[in-house]
Structures are given as C-alpha cells and as structure tokens.
Image 1 (cartoon, helix red, strand yellow):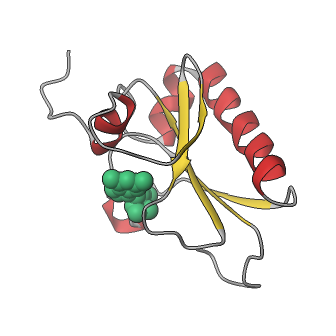
Image 2 (image 1 turned 30 degrees about the vertical axis):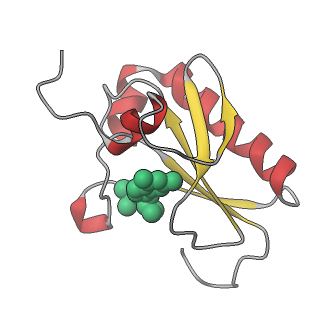
Length: 116
Ligand code: 5GP
C-alpha cells in the first residue's frame, strides 16, 4: 500500500472532487483538464495510482498503456476531428505536477508549432 496521500486524480476517481468526466471504464477514467491548453484538453488516467509516470506504466503494465493510448485516440475522434497530440509530462523538470500517470490529449484546432 502507498504511504503517499491520494493524488488529486485518485480523489476525482473516488468522487471526492468533481470533474467533467468524458470516459469511465474498469481501469481508466478521462476528464477535461481544469486549465485547458487547447479547445479539447482531456486527461486519460489509469484508476490505479501505482504508476507515477509513463515509464513506470510501460514497465509495469504495458497492456494498460496500450488501452490508454487507444482510449485517447477514440476520444480525439469523438470530441474533435480525430487529430490529436498526446503528451506525458515526466518529471518535475518537464512540467509534471501530478505524480499519478496521465496522458494529456490535446485536440480541436491546435496552434501550429506549439507543444502545449
Ligand atoms: P501535469 O502537469 O502533471 O502533466 O498535468 C496535471 C494536469 O492536471 C494539469 O494540466 C492541471 O491543469 C490538471 N489538474 C490539476 N488539478 C486538477 C483538478 O482538480 N481537476 C482537473 N480536471 N484537472 C486538474
């Protein structure tokens, strides 16, 4: 069991913090980012908080990572025109602020050349 406090995403998963949920399954949840950086900005998050970043997830549960990517792809098609940018910030130096692995799905009229 983790000795860390539950992440903000675990609190959303537990229903303790409201979120605009766009997808919910046994192992994944997706909701709109509170501070959107694109017309469509969704976070796809494993329900387990066992993995802090995408490298840990890839090593520990590659099938769940594949499911996460497939979900991101489907959401980009459902919520925008199907084109999207998938970002995993990994480490504080790369801007990661929540250490519960999540993918940013950015879609819907992205600014050419920008990374976020
Ligand atoms: P990171 O910087 O770790 O890659 O991304 C964390 C993301 O979580 C940020 O884009 C931030 O806006 C989003 N976020 C943080 N707290 C909340 C929250 O309570 N609700 C929602 N919907 N998004 C959040």
